[in-house]
Length: 183
Image 1: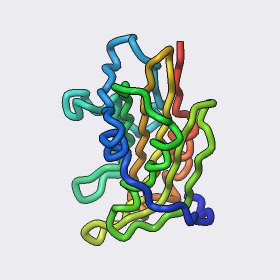
Image 2: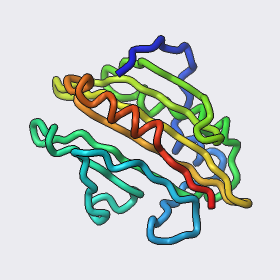
Image 3: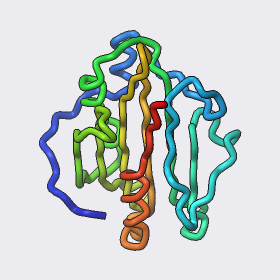
């Protein structure tokens, strides 16, 4: 994964905490219902979809079983939900890094607030260690709007740090190819 300079961005509250503070929540969208923007990531070779009933609040989950180690496999988790009340997208996205920064031994590599497909977005990339296993993770948060409805999309890609060189292209493709179809 690219090693870019870190940021001095302040530690903000979590997304969930911010939503609670402003009296809103995020209700998961059902991929089978066409009442929201369609979100997707490509299914790259070696990555397999996980049955929806295993992750009922996730919009889509992929795993890479060929890179499984110690009962854990690299994964892509796509969450997509409707916000129950209007929110200031920029204020909400300012909280995008808090959950990552709370992970044990978090080391931040990239932070960006560049828009994604024209929508307000926050991106954070880094690594963390749990039980002597180091993971590389990316999180992208996007707020989109259709009419008076707002939607929050989160894409998390997590791999073993030791597999970063081998899976780096996949991680980049998942993050750059996240598609939010508005019509």
